[in-house]
Each structure stands twice: as structure tokens, then as C-alpha cells.
Image 1: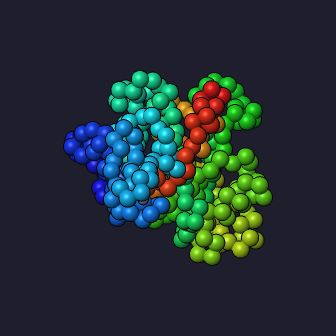
Image 2 (image 1 turned 180 degrees about the vertical axis):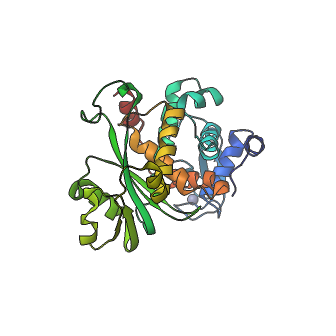
Image 3 (image 1 turned 120 degrees about the vertical axis):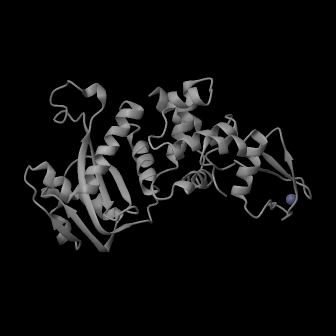
Length: 307
Ligand SMILES: [Zn+2]
């Protein structure tokens, strides 16, 4: 099932709620309806809600129950439109822009919708990186910190770690927030947690926090770079590109993001990076995540919005 690649195709595939419902239903249950109670294979659609009713026993099954779309009041078409923007726009979309483009009544609706989508884009913990990888770290700062001196010293900047495979077009990326440059608490668990230990070579700069990698049994290329930036870009092309794209994305689309929400944005960025060679499948991949992820209660997100 191919998710539409253009807005024109989107409007043709999803002219109304009914078409969205049938499309999503086919995606979720490719073999058709099967009643969980009696095994019946014929159902009626209860159009008022997103329900199938079993013709044999009357049991009602919801298309969205138990998924991120659980009890959503937002039309399915709006959800699909948001998936389209997240999948098709290299720079993704902000809540304000989604509110405008989808004609949503409130900013809050758009914000919640996008956060629910981002919440399903986290990395698959079993998909470990391998081969030659670069491990590096950088600081991100929110815009309101500009002009404040010693932001780093005051802990206002956020340290981000990256491990990225050096594999043209296919290399995968993992990002995480770190509290420090120490091996024991931060760099070690992060790097070791995302790589296939025996078949990975980790290239890092001369930072002390990476030194214990070798003692931990990991093949380590430690390269002391000095201060020449162009040499550093040559040695660590992937992590440099990732950090520079990440920073310009956060600045451009979201005008900076607070630390509280940063993990979700890192997930969204990594998801897009990791699916970059797979543009026609990215919309379907997002929807696959939507249907395999548990509901994210509204109150939890609302607390975040207020907080
Ligand atoms: Zn039944």
C-alpha cells in the first residue's frame, strides 16, 4: 500500500473520511476483517464511529483502538495530511504551519497531533549500528539563551551525542541527550547501547571520555584532530553533516526547541535520516508505527503543553 507522494495524489486517494477509513483499515488488516470473538470475516462499517461490527455475532471492533489514534476527535483525513507533511517535507512541519495548512481550529490540536506522531518515531532498540561508525557530540542551545554569557557553564545548553554509520545513502543514525562527557555515565552506555559490539569500529576524536572504549572490548579509532576545522570535517563527515542539519532544522522549522521536548525532535530527525533512501515508503512506515504503538494519553501531553 503506497502512501501518496504528491498533494494531488493525496486528494485523489483521500477525498473524504470514508476513503481514509477504508485505506487505513486495509493497511491495518491487510487480510480483511476477522472478528476477534467468533472469527467471522464479514462486517458492517458503523459510519458514525470508526467501528466494524461483526455480521455474525455483533462484536464491535475499532480501527484505532489501542493505537496512537485511540479515541481521536481529529478527522482521519487531518491525521493523514499531517503524516503527509512529516513524510514528504524534508523540513517537516511546525504546529503553526499545520494549523494553517490543515485549517485546524486551534494551535493546540495541531501541537498535540504532531507530538503524538513524533512519539512513535523513536528508534528500534534492536536495530544496532555496525561497521565503521562515527561517535561525536555537540551542544545545542535554545534561542532564549542567546546573549547570555557562559551558557555552557550554567548548564543551559544541551549536550547531544550522535553515533552514525559511515555508509553512503544507507547509514543509520542514533542521537541522544547526554548529561556529561564521562564514559561511565554517558558516552559509554550511549555508544555501547546502540552498536553491535563485535562488528563495529568506533571512530572518535581525542576526547578522554571515549578512551575506555578499547578496554571495553570495542575497536576504537581515536583521532586527535587539533583545531583545524576542515580536517575535522574530513575525518568526521557524517557527524558534522548530521549536527549541522539538525541545528538548522531546529532553528528553521521550530525556532529552537526546549530541552523538555528535544527527545521527540531527535527521534523525528533520526527517523527521517534513517529512512532517507526510502522516500516512497516513509509515509507507510510512519503509519505502521502509529498502528503498532500504544495510545499516548491526552492528559500526559496536555500536562506537557501547560508545563
Ligand atoms: Zn464475531
